[in-house]
Image (tube, rainbow, N blue to C red):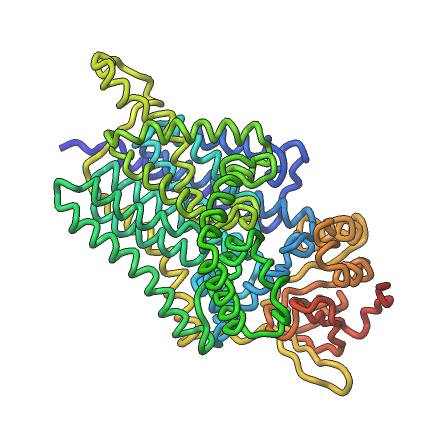
Length: 632
């Protein structure tokens, strides 16, 4: 019996070499960074994405023994390069300071993740999104409290999930369609490079769910169906969005396996979905604040739908709203919604119609399903491709047709409950974006089943390999096993950290006279040092030019946080170190750079807490870091 070439020692050696080269490249990019010319920026513009997609196309065209390691390795390099570019940019926007330090919602996620790995429960804020906090906590624990490294690991998880899904699509849709799907997802994902946000979990688990579901529907792999629905449900629990895709997929599974007991298949599919939500609710009970609830702020979205506004309308309409606790807010919001709907039931349909109109007709206002492109012409073309993909799926004759049709129905039916004006360039749809991208991709392959019906002779004509699906009727356990690291990082690692082996806090504070005494473990802290132009930082991304830092304070940050902006501009000078605190008490820390050369890992400094913003303060400022009083 001859040994297949795919298992030969030479093949294995080349696979190991490709994996090793990718790992070394990722480490080099993470530790040293890369200055990407603006023309090829991964964060902005099309050229950086085009380079990434070209590599994806070539990797997908490679021979099967090398396809997986080359593709996933390339995507890992691409994601790591994107984070390095963000850190090198030193930009300060709504979620990051100096290209690295989490702020605003990202700072809250860091706080909740830090609480978990330090053996404490989440706050009420974190209890609303327990699986997202847990996923970020798992990565932070693996990275031993290094924020930058934890986000690099999260990027690798996203890259691997996208790569696995692209490989499955290569088999079931062909090379061109798989490349189109990957291109769409790379454009969408780059916005979240290096950001400690729930979208990290949504994209990674959403893409992995698609990989398993495509294997299930195309390859008749029943076990992958249960795993895929479970993983996709975890994605939606972590990043709430278009929930109605789940019942749509359950119904599609019943149709796909109708000859093998469709009702039983649908029932087990529903159990898989329910199990994922049960995990989230159990996590709230285990590590959430007493009385904390998942998605406890969703009533604000419903209020905006009914009263023709956005998620902030309830706070604007209801007196003393900000002074109420969450239970009182929800009770008052639902009372007003109930009274309004009873007096005028048409408010529901008007709100739904308005949101559908935004979704389908307002690409120029960045409200459409492909608004993350920020190019109405591109969005229009993709909408047309999506319409064609839907048309091709209607006969339900292709193996993937039920899944594509379920994606269409589930997302469209969810739109009234996830308004695109609130979605922030489809951010709220992060968990289902990998599923939604199947619709335009299917336009490139679904036509064949129609043509076979209209002209049977076409079935005998040979098409290019890039357009021919290659289905396999096997249940691949390795695809299911690929989900285990994701589940471990989201669930097992955080629980291990919380109850068995927590880390000691890297930051602690204590009152000292009229000020505050801060104890900081520099060895476990994430920080950036502001230096003079051409300073001695070399390629270390932790050293940032003070001028670059000051210029990088983004316009949106200035608008939303004027007091914080004034402080940052005042301390934008060489010799200042900004530290991620991960603490409930302090948003971030500013200390003197002299401490970086001190003997030992721990330092103790005296300073003061400066209030900047009611939601994200205070800032700890060491006494030696003089700062002019900001002008108000």
